[in-house]
Length: 242
Image (cartoon, rainbow, N blue to C red; front, side, top):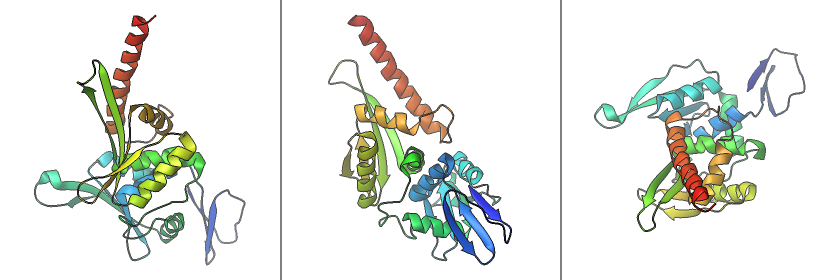
C-alpha cells in the first residue's frame, strides 16, 4: 500500500519510509503487494533510468491484477514479439521513483534475469510472494504414470535464468515449509526448481491458503483439477482398505 502525505503531516506507520523534499512516502507490506513483488521478480523488469517498472505477460488478467494492486492509472498496451497475433503480449509501465528504489532495496535490479538472487521478503508474506513468482514464471504438470497402476503424478516447477535465485527460493521454502526440491538446468539457459507430488501438495497449500486470493485463474484451475484427481484417488484407496 502506498500513502502520500501532505507536507508537515507525519505519523507512525509500519513499513519502510522515504522522505523526498516535503513529501513523505510510506510503503506497507500486504498480501497483495507481496504477490505483485513476486510478479516483478519474475516477469517484470526495472529500466536503467531509475524510474520505470515494466511488466509484460501473455495473460491480460495478470496485468490487470498488477495494475489493481498498485492502484495504477496507466494504460495497458500491447507488445508484439516476432510475427503473428500469437506473439502479442500485454504490457504496463509504471513511472515511480520511490517504488523503484524500494524494489532495489529488496534486491531487484535492472537486467536482473541472470543476476537476481536473495530478496528481502518478510516471512509473513512469503507465500503470497511465491504465488506471484509462480504466476510469473512457474507451472504445474501432471500425468498418469504407466509404470504403476492408478499412479497420478504432480510436479510444481519454478523457472529462472538465475540459478542463485532458485537456490535462494529452494532454501527459503525448506526453511519455512520443510520440503525439498531439485534444481536442474533446462534448455535456453534456464534453470528449473522442481517439486514432486508430496512436496507439491504441501507447497500449493501454502501458496493457495484461501479460496479467494489474487492469482492467475487459469493456473489455479489446472491445479484444482489435479488436486481433485488426487483427492478422489485417496477416497478410493480408503474405501478399498477399510
